[in-house]
Length: 142
Image (cartoon, rainbow, N blue to C red; front, side, top):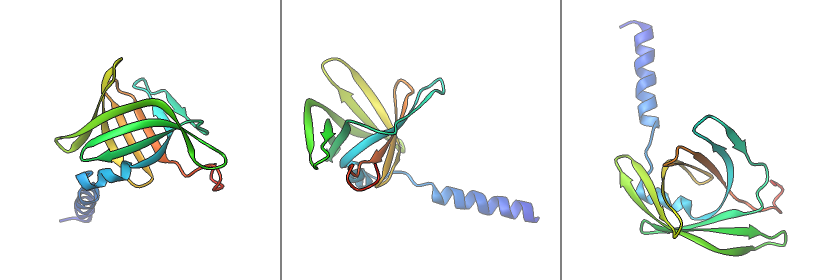
């Protein structure tokens, strides 16, 4: 076997083992406060957010969740809004899908990436949302 084929095979094996799917127990990483970092529309247009007045509080238990908009205070703490979106999570193949239903709309979001500091979802309209963990305004990062 020549060196190019060996390097290619090693690369492919390493790539396959480094690609991990999100496990059910990893969904606990969704719990907490998140701010939207970026939105990518299906047509390629991107919107980057440098500051967010509102952040999302997400809580997941047993594949059921709630997402609520909250406003952080400069003194600490959060002021919650009156709107909340309940959702369920189901596994479809290797993907986790969030199912939302409100009085006005119904939609899904497929989880593309999840770790302690970031998650990315793509909704059924082709829009991709990137969220980063919200750490507050007083820690010097905002």
